[in-house]
Image (cartoon, rainbow, N blue to C red; front, side):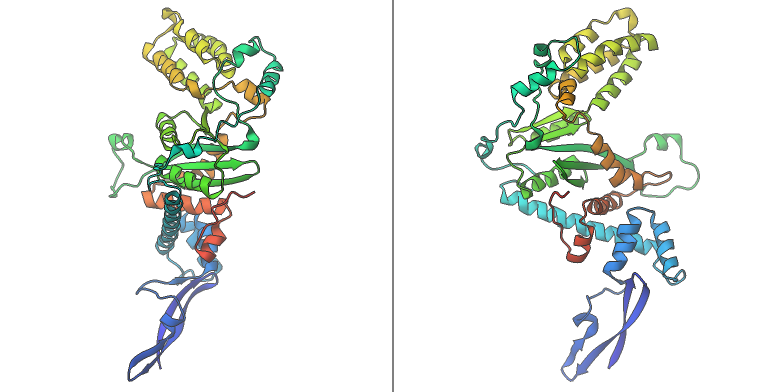
Length: 420
């Protein structure tokens, strides 16, 4: 018998186990290092399920690699012979990369089965979905909600807004937002960074999606809008949600809205709502730059915001166009605000009536998921990330929030189902 070491990184420590080979005249007939244990490469360690759960899911997705390494090695009384933090980082990125690869392949299979190309473009007959008409509330219920408002505007004027009021019981709420983190430089520089280098800071872009259907939910993260929407389409099919209305909530970013429109052009029952908070923020920012003083800005805001809250976008645009020239210091910024409202007119609903109907007006849940999935882990002072490093941590964090982490570690698969 010949003995070899088999290296295991476990929740109770790092160990070497003796393995055995049985050799006869014909060669090796039995080798526990390959026949009983998973095969390892030269410098690789086998990582147990418990180690991955503690070090990666409970550690790395919450704290830095150094902090997690220090903690697990201290708990295992292996400060000197324990797991190096670079090794833990490499293991975590590998785990996240395998998770992303699985999700990508699963998405491709689902899309192909439903006649989509790999990039999420529908190649089938759109007539298949023509029966899925708009799932909206009855006109009677909408008028009753509008009639209960304490406002100077007439019900007819409020309901002239073309943005539909979805039936929440037959709708899927989808919040989409981009989140950026500082990108690592390819080469390290000694000494202070020049000002021009700081101004040219590059970022890693990820897209986070939160899907809500009544009390069930699921989150997704992808390397960009198009990739994340691929996952979204596959999830919608996987959960048999065709026939429901897909109600999107965004911050009004043009590229995001245009991508949603192109990716869902095959489906007739969807719409986008511009988040009220971002609409208010945009108006305040551009009017601050456009008007000559705070008093003039606030005066215009007091007139414009009630109009927008009640979905009277045309009247708001007319008011902005009629501002006296002597009150404006920057015509370009004022024109930019007017163009913004004109471009997003079809996404600005009557927020007041929506609130009365108990419908969502905000993409705040998307902002919260950005914080939970990316920002809380990746936006601390001094942190910068590679593209793969940022995405793998975000993917593992998403699996944890979805309650999928144990399924992934044990069975190497995802349920891919909305859950309470």
